[in-house]
Length: 224
Image (cartoon, rainbow, N blue to C red; front, side, top):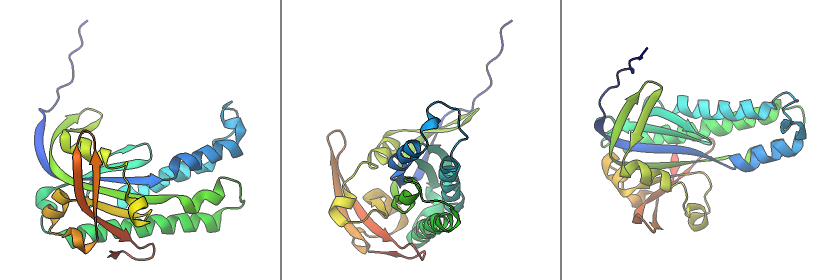
């Protein structure tokens, strides 16, 4: 018997902000968890609570960025989200406040976990090294509504992901920050000089310019 394929919506164009919230130190942290719990490889020990905790961090970020951003999917140690252009046009302060408050809530959750933990294994001591950075780009992209979720594609999506590998920390000393590209700054009505101007160069994408905004752990306000 031939089974009919489920109907799919036609791909459509959209435009707006493309945002990635990426946990820095994620791989090193879970690597240390594996070292502290060697039975993980054999699959015979209970799953260490650190794994569930990392998921709660991503869930928290997904909750906090709404309604300014709409989460699309988690990608390992990052959350990918979008904001329609008509929602964020000339609303830069609101966008920055959303990012800033998300960052503060993220670190408050880590501090709470530190107070609650009952031991100091080699992994737990790395909790404070788990930083959060935001990449914010803008452009047009193709939206595919699939049975199991939404898929975004296009050059702007590729570039946003490419910017996860950058030299912001080396250039500014910041580990927690929001990097806005010039197209994103133009859309939301901000100037790069309100933060720290920055540029990245890629062999296949050329030079990408924008601004970096520092984030405060105890407040939603961003600083240059």
